[in-house]
Each structure stands twice: as C-alpha cells, then as structure tokens.
Image 1 (cartoon, rainbow, N blue to C red):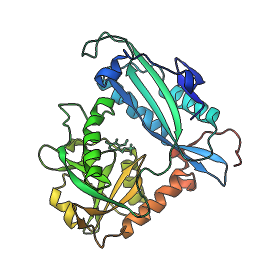
Image 2 (cartoon, helix red, strand yellow):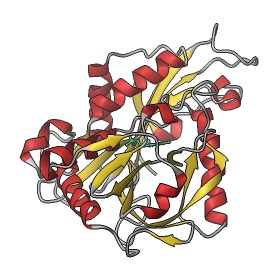
Image 3 (tube, rainbow, N blue to C red):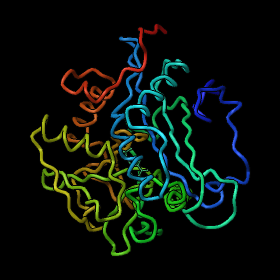
Length: 310
Ligand SMILES: Cc1ncc(COP(=O)(O)O)c(C=O)c1O
C-alpha cells in the first residue's frame, strides 16, 4: 500500500484519507480524474512525471464541463503532485490519480449547489497491457457514448461504465481489449486507449468528433511520428472494416503506453506481429517518457530533488 495521499488540503497517511458513503460522486459518478505516469529511470535514480501540466490542463477542462471548482492553479497542482510523489519515494513505475469530485453528502441528481473537493493518490503501476507480444482486440457490442450524452472529452468517472462494460465483455469472450464504435458505426477508441492504424504507410486515427478522449499519449505519438519518422497522422473517421485491412494497429494511453494490436475480431493485423512503425514509435516513446531523450525533456518533470538509489 502507498504511504501518503493528498486529501483535505494536506499530505496525510493514505490509511486516514476516507470519504463518507453519502458522497455525491460515489452515487452519481460526478467526479473528474486524471491518470499521470511516473516513469522510473534507474540509471539516474529519478522519477519522471510525464506531461504533468497537460494532464492538469485536461482536468481543468473536464471540471469546467462538470461544473467542479478546482481549488488550485495548474502550477500548484503540479507542485502538490511532485511533493506527494517525492514523499512516497517509489523506485518503480507509478500511476498518479488526481480526482476532483462533488463531495457534498447529499442526495439528488444534479451538478449545482454542491461542494467540490480534490484528492491525489499514487500507486505502483507496471504495464497495463502486453506491450511486447501485443494484444488481441474485438469490436465491442457496446457503442461509445456520445458527446451529447456524457462528453467523452471529459474524463468523468461515470462515463467509465461504458468502458467497463466493453472491457469485461471483451475479456469474458477471450480478448484482451475492446474497440468501441460510435453510434454511427465509426471506430472511436479502446476502453482506455486511443487507436491508431497504419494504412498504406500513413498513420490514421479517429478525430475528436468521434467521441474519443483527446489522449496525451495520442498527441505524443503524433508529434514523435512527425518529428522523428517524418510520418504525418491523418485524423479522420475510420470505418470498422479498415481495422481488418490495416497493415498495423496500435493502442495509446498513459496506462497502455504504445501497445501493438496483433489481432482484431479473429483476423490477423498484418502478419500478426507488432509492425515496424509501431515498434519504432514504441521505442521512441519509451526513451522520451523515461527522460532519455534530451529533445523532449520539457515533457518530463523530475519528482526527486536528489537521486534515489535502489
Ligand atoms: C477512454 C480513454 N481513451 C484514451 C485514453 C488515453 O489518454 P491518455 O493518453 O491521455 O492517457 C484514456 C486514458 O486515459 C482513456 O481512458
């Protein structure tokens, strides 16, 4: 168990950070969250928090949509997170989970006339999917929720029931991950990842209007593909059948990193192994997130004031 959390405006033992069973967010899914990775660099004895500012900017937007008042500036949120990560002192990859939520102990489905609160916890977190071998996906029978239902661009806890239904259905049917379609039948995203295809040598990924979360890993990969490999990414609606004819496919996310997809609906992607472009992007991405690429060090915030030795 991690030792410390940020709760009630202070860093305290995680074991003392408790909320009431009457908390509004627990009943109605009225909370916004982020997932930020801390990537351990053992040679440097340093923990690099990846694109922390961008995660908090996204949290700010989610909170605007859900009418949650974030009590701190972006800089303060980054500073609190660095402090908490340093207090926990992990020497392995971690996941940071900030949550802004409707904290009133009150019944009634609404967003107005409620108090808001904020907490952060940190937990060790290895790879979420098999980044080496790749994953087998299915197209879910569950459709991606629409912007006019619960806006998927906001990372709202209640929205994740949609993802959980799809993920468990996939898993119970023997797959590793689900890919959801929009109501119109376009490819949207995985249960917790954005989807990329390689089609005739170009990278293709669904646009924000197809009900995706605007992933920070998605943005990272688009920039790395352009800057380092000279490959442009086309953001456009993707048909289901394009999943079956793509040369390569991969998923991106803070948890999933860059995960090759080797099979979709029992059809091999390419030759059924991680593709060449996918492997190159994966390697670039891993160097960048561990602070090993000087060009992209701006994306990495060191959490430890002095080097930690395992
Ligand atoms: C539904 C969904 N899509 C995509 C992503 C990928 O976003 P990011 O790369 O910012 O982690 C996530 C993960 O947060 C997610 O939950």
